[in-house]
Image (cartoon, rainbow, N blue to C red; front, side, top):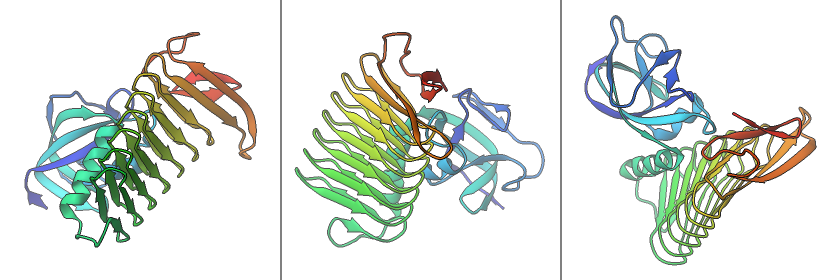
Length: 277
Protein backbone atom coordinates (compact mmCIF):
# COMPACT_ATOMS: atom_id res chain seq x y z
CA UNK A 1 0.00 0.00 0.00
CA UNK A 2 1.36 3.42 -0.93
CA UNK A 3 0.35 7.07 -1.04
CA UNK A 4 1.28 8.44 -4.45
CA UNK A 5 -0.04 10.23 -7.54
CA UNK A 6 -0.10 8.17 -10.73
CA UNK A 7 -1.16 8.92 -14.30
CA UNK A 8 -3.04 5.84 -15.51
CA UNK A 9 -5.79 4.70 -17.88
CA UNK A 10 -9.29 3.37 -17.40
CA UNK A 11 -11.93 1.70 -19.54
CA UNK A 12 -15.69 2.16 -19.34
CA UNK A 13 -18.82 0.95 -21.07
CA UNK A 14 -20.59 3.12 -23.63
CA UNK A 15 -22.23 5.18 -20.86
CA UNK A 16 -18.92 5.89 -19.10
CA UNK A 17 -19.79 3.41 -16.35
CA UNK A 18 -17.58 0.81 -14.72
CA UNK A 19 -19.05 -1.79 -12.38
CA UNK A 20 -22.32 0.16 -12.49
CA UNK A 21 -20.58 3.26 -11.10
CA UNK A 22 -21.25 6.38 -13.17
CA UNK A 23 -18.21 8.52 -13.98
CA UNK A 24 -17.96 11.95 -15.55
CA UNK A 25 -15.04 13.59 -17.30
CA UNK A 26 -13.56 16.36 -15.19
CA UNK A 27 -14.83 14.95 -11.91
CA UNK A 28 -12.91 13.48 -8.97
CA UNK A 29 -14.10 10.67 -6.73
CA UNK A 30 -13.06 9.36 -3.32
CA UNK A 31 -13.51 5.78 -2.12
CA UNK A 32 -14.45 5.30 1.53
CA UNK A 33 -12.99 2.21 3.18
CA UNK A 34 -10.34 -0.37 2.33
CA UNK A 35 -8.34 -0.12 -0.91
CA UNK A 36 -7.52 -3.55 -2.30
CA UNK A 37 -6.85 -4.50 -5.94
CA UNK A 38 -9.56 -6.77 -7.40
CA UNK A 39 -11.74 -6.01 -4.40
CA UNK A 40 -12.19 -2.45 -3.14
CA UNK A 41 -11.39 0.98 -4.56
CA UNK A 42 -11.29 2.55 -8.00
CA UNK A 43 -9.43 0.41 -10.55
CA UNK A 44 -7.25 1.45 -13.48
CA UNK A 45 -4.20 0.36 -15.49
CA UNK A 46 -0.78 1.97 -15.74
CA UNK A 47 -0.01 0.39 -19.12
CA UNK A 48 -2.64 1.74 -21.56
CA UNK A 49 -3.30 -1.47 -23.50
CA UNK A 50 -3.97 -3.42 -20.30
CA UNK A 51 -7.41 -1.82 -20.32
CA UNK A 52 -8.28 -4.10 -23.26
CA UNK A 53 -8.20 -7.03 -20.83
CA UNK A 54 -11.28 -5.56 -19.15
CA UNK A 55 -12.91 -3.52 -21.90
CA UNK A 56 -12.34 -4.65 -25.51
CA UNK A 57 -11.52 -1.89 -28.03
CA UNK A 58 -14.88 -1.98 -29.78
CA UNK A 59 -17.71 -0.10 -28.12
CA UNK A 60 -15.79 0.83 -24.98
CA UNK A 61 -14.65 4.28 -23.90
CA UNK A 62 -11.27 5.13 -22.45
CA UNK A 63 -9.85 7.95 -20.37
CA UNK A 64 -6.57 9.12 -18.91
CA UNK A 65 -6.98 9.40 -15.16
CA UNK A 66 -5.06 10.49 -12.10
CA UNK A 67 -4.92 7.96 -9.25
CA UNK A 68 -3.93 9.18 -5.80
CA UNK A 69 -4.21 8.53 -2.09
CA UNK A 70 -3.85 4.91 -1.05
CA UNK A 71 -2.79 2.68 -3.97
CA UNK A 72 -2.62 -1.12 -4.15
CA UNK A 73 -1.12 -2.92 -7.16
CA UNK A 74 -1.80 -6.43 -8.41
CA UNK A 75 -0.93 -7.99 -11.78
CA UNK A 76 -1.93 -5.61 -14.60
CA UNK A 77 -4.07 -3.21 -12.59
CA UNK A 78 -4.16 -1.09 -9.48
CA UNK A 79 -6.77 0.08 -7.02
CA UNK A 80 -6.73 3.61 -5.65
CA UNK A 81 -8.49 5.68 -3.03
CA UNK A 82 -8.96 8.78 -5.21
CA UNK A 83 -9.51 9.01 -8.95
CA UNK A 84 -9.78 12.01 -11.25
CA UNK A 85 -11.13 11.53 -14.79
CA UNK A 86 -8.85 13.94 -16.64
CA UNK A 87 -9.77 13.44 -20.30
CA UNK A 88 -11.53 10.94 -22.52
CA UNK A 89 -9.31 9.60 -25.29
CA UNK A 90 -10.36 7.45 -28.20
CA UNK A 91 -8.67 4.40 -29.62
CA UNK A 92 -5.88 6.38 -31.33
CA UNK A 93 -5.24 8.10 -28.01
CA UNK A 94 -4.87 4.78 -26.20
CA UNK A 95 -2.47 3.53 -28.88
CA UNK A 96 -0.37 6.70 -28.74
CA UNK A 97 -0.28 6.48 -24.95
CA UNK A 98 0.87 2.85 -25.14
CA UNK A 99 3.69 3.74 -27.50
CA UNK A 100 4.78 6.70 -25.37
CA UNK A 101 4.65 4.51 -22.25
CA UNK A 102 6.68 1.73 -23.85
CA UNK A 103 9.31 4.01 -25.32
CA UNK A 104 9.78 5.74 -21.98
CA UNK A 105 10.55 2.43 -20.28
CA UNK A 106 11.98 0.13 -22.95
CA UNK A 107 15.60 -0.83 -23.28
CA UNK A 108 17.24 0.50 -26.36
CA UNK A 109 17.41 -2.14 -29.11
CA UNK A 110 19.84 -2.40 -31.99
CA UNK A 111 18.29 -1.29 -35.27
CA UNK A 112 14.56 -0.88 -35.60
CA UNK A 113 13.46 -4.21 -34.19
CA UNK A 114 12.55 -5.28 -30.67
CA UNK A 115 11.81 -8.87 -29.60
CA UNK A 116 11.61 -8.32 -25.85
CA UNK A 117 8.37 -7.96 -23.92
CA UNK A 118 7.38 -4.30 -23.62
CA UNK A 119 10.04 -3.57 -26.22
CA UNK A 120 9.79 -0.57 -28.51
CA UNK A 121 10.80 0.09 -32.10
CA UNK A 122 10.70 3.43 -33.86
CA UNK A 123 11.27 4.51 -37.43
CA UNK A 124 11.20 8.24 -38.17
CA UNK A 125 12.65 8.43 -41.68
CA UNK A 126 10.80 8.17 -44.99
CA UNK A 127 10.16 4.58 -46.24
CA UNK A 128 11.29 3.27 -42.85
CA UNK A 129 10.03 0.23 -40.96
CA UNK A 130 9.62 -0.62 -37.28
CA UNK A 131 8.78 -4.03 -35.85
CA UNK A 132 7.98 -5.17 -32.31
CA UNK A 133 7.47 -8.91 -31.73
CA UNK A 134 7.21 -9.22 -27.94
CA UNK A 135 4.03 -9.01 -25.88
CA UNK A 136 3.02 -5.50 -24.73
CA UNK A 137 5.43 -4.07 -27.32
CA UNK A 138 5.06 -0.96 -29.44
CA UNK A 139 6.15 0.01 -32.93
CA UNK A 140 5.94 3.50 -34.35
CA UNK A 141 6.62 4.79 -37.85
CA UNK A 142 6.40 8.53 -38.40
CA UNK A 143 7.98 8.95 -41.83
CA UNK A 144 6.37 9.14 -45.25
CA UNK A 145 5.44 5.66 -46.60
CA UNK A 146 6.68 3.99 -43.41
CA UNK A 147 5.46 0.79 -41.80
CA UNK A 148 4.99 -0.36 -38.20
CA UNK A 149 4.26 -3.90 -37.10
CA UNK A 150 3.44 -5.36 -33.69
CA UNK A 151 3.01 -9.14 -33.49
CA UNK A 152 2.80 -9.81 -29.75
CA UNK A 153 -0.37 -9.83 -27.64
CA UNK A 154 -1.51 -6.46 -26.25
CA UNK A 155 0.87 -4.72 -28.67
CA UNK A 156 0.44 -1.40 -30.45
CA UNK A 157 1.48 -0.22 -33.90
CA UNK A 158 1.21 3.36 -35.09
CA UNK A 159 1.87 4.92 -38.48
CA UNK A 160 1.54 8.69 -38.67
CA UNK A 161 3.04 9.54 -42.07
CA UNK A 162 1.11 9.65 -45.35
CA UNK A 163 0.80 6.33 -47.22
CA UNK A 164 1.97 4.52 -44.08
CA UNK A 165 0.82 1.17 -42.72
CA UNK A 166 0.33 -0.20 -39.22
CA UNK A 167 -0.29 -3.84 -38.44
CA UNK A 168 -1.13 -5.60 -35.18
CA UNK A 169 -1.42 -9.40 -35.27
CA UNK A 170 -1.53 -10.35 -31.58
CA UNK A 171 -4.68 -10.75 -29.51
CA UNK A 172 -6.10 -7.54 -27.98
CA UNK A 173 -3.61 -5.53 -30.01
CA UNK A 174 -4.25 -2.18 -31.67
CA UNK A 175 -3.14 -0.55 -34.91
CA UNK A 176 -3.52 3.11 -35.77
CA UNK A 177 -2.91 4.97 -39.02
CA UNK A 178 -3.27 8.74 -38.88
CA UNK A 179 -1.68 9.84 -42.15
CA UNK A 180 -3.54 10.31 -45.43
CA UNK A 181 -4.02 7.17 -47.56
CA UNK A 182 -2.72 5.07 -44.69
CA UNK A 183 -3.81 1.60 -43.63
CA UNK A 184 -4.30 -0.08 -40.27
CA UNK A 185 -4.79 -3.81 -39.87
CA UNK A 186 -5.62 -5.88 -36.81
CA UNK A 187 -5.78 -9.67 -37.17
CA UNK A 188 -5.81 -10.90 -33.57
CA UNK A 189 -8.93 -11.59 -31.51
CA UNK A 190 -10.40 -8.58 -29.66
CA UNK A 191 -8.08 -6.37 -31.70
CA UNK A 192 -8.73 -2.88 -33.00
CA UNK A 193 -7.74 -0.97 -36.12
CA UNK A 194 -8.17 2.78 -36.47
CA UNK A 195 -7.68 5.00 -39.51
CA UNK A 196 -8.05 8.74 -39.03
CA UNK A 197 -6.41 10.12 -42.17
CA UNK A 198 -8.18 10.93 -45.44
CA UNK A 199 -8.63 8.03 -47.90
CA UNK A 200 -7.48 5.65 -45.15
CA UNK A 201 -8.50 2.06 -44.51
CA UNK A 202 -8.93 0.05 -41.33
CA UNK A 203 -9.33 -3.71 -41.31
CA UNK A 204 -10.08 -6.08 -38.43
CA UNK A 205 -10.14 -9.80 -39.23
CA UNK A 206 -9.94 -11.35 -35.77
CA UNK A 207 -12.96 -12.45 -33.75
CA UNK A 208 -14.69 -9.72 -31.73
CA UNK A 209 -12.49 -7.17 -33.48
CA UNK A 210 -13.23 -3.55 -34.29
CA UNK A 211 -12.34 -1.25 -37.19
CA UNK A 212 -12.98 2.48 -37.40
CA UNK A 213 -12.43 5.04 -40.13
CA UNK A 214 -12.88 8.67 -39.14
CA UNK A 215 -11.04 10.58 -41.87
CA UNK A 216 -12.70 11.71 -45.08
CA UNK A 217 -13.43 9.13 -47.80
CA UNK A 218 -12.05 6.19 -45.84
CA UNK A 219 -13.23 2.64 -45.24
CA UNK A 220 -13.52 0.24 -42.31
CA UNK A 221 -14.00 -3.53 -42.51
CA UNK A 222 -14.62 -6.21 -39.89
CA UNK A 223 -14.66 -9.79 -41.12
CA UNK A 224 -14.22 -11.81 -37.92
CA UNK A 225 -16.88 -13.37 -35.71
CA UNK A 226 -19.02 -10.62 -34.11
CA UNK A 227 -16.83 -7.89 -35.57
CA UNK A 228 -17.76 -4.21 -35.41
CA UNK A 229 -17.21 -1.13 -37.59
CA UNK A 230 -17.64 2.60 -37.13
CA UNK A 231 -17.07 5.65 -39.29
CA UNK A 232 -17.82 9.30 -39.89
CA UNK A 233 -20.01 10.69 -42.69
CA UNK A 234 -18.99 9.54 -46.15
CA UNK A 235 -16.91 6.57 -45.04
CA UNK A 236 -17.60 3.08 -46.35
CA UNK A 237 -18.34 0.26 -43.91
CA UNK A 238 -18.05 -3.47 -44.59
CA UNK A 239 -19.28 -6.29 -42.33
CA UNK A 240 -19.21 -10.07 -42.41
CA UNK A 241 -21.63 -12.18 -40.37
CA UNK A 242 -20.51 -15.62 -39.17
CA UNK A 243 -22.25 -18.38 -37.28
CA UNK A 244 -20.81 -20.11 -34.20
CA UNK A 245 -18.82 -22.41 -36.49
CA UNK A 246 -17.29 -19.27 -38.02
CA UNK A 247 -18.90 -19.97 -41.39
CA UNK A 248 -19.86 -16.89 -43.40
CA UNK A 249 -23.63 -16.54 -43.55
CA UNK A 250 -24.03 -12.95 -44.77
CA UNK A 251 -22.19 -9.79 -45.81
CA UNK A 252 -23.11 -6.12 -45.89
CA UNK A 253 -21.69 -2.86 -47.22
CA UNK A 254 -22.88 0.67 -46.68
CA UNK A 255 -21.94 4.33 -46.50
CA UNK A 256 -22.16 6.36 -43.31
CA UNK A 257 -24.84 9.01 -43.68
CA UNK A 258 -26.95 6.93 -46.09
CA UNK A 259 -29.81 4.48 -45.49
CA UNK A 260 -29.95 5.31 -41.80
CA UNK A 261 -26.31 4.50 -41.02
CA UNK A 262 -25.24 6.99 -38.34
CA UNK A 263 -21.80 8.56 -37.90
CA UNK A 264 -19.66 7.63 -34.88
CA UNK A 265 -21.86 4.63 -34.03
CA UNK A 266 -20.57 1.05 -33.84
CA UNK A 267 -22.36 -1.51 -36.01
CA UNK A 268 -22.33 -5.30 -36.13
CA UNK A 269 -24.13 -7.57 -38.60
CA UNK A 270 -27.07 -9.57 -37.20
CA UNK A 271 -29.42 -11.56 -39.44
CA UNK A 272 -28.01 -9.75 -42.45
CA UNK A 273 -28.74 -6.27 -41.09
CA UNK A 274 -26.37 -3.73 -39.49
CA UNK A 275 -27.30 -3.33 -35.83
CA UNK A 276 -26.15 -0.55 -33.53
CA UNK A 277 -23.84 -1.77 -30.77
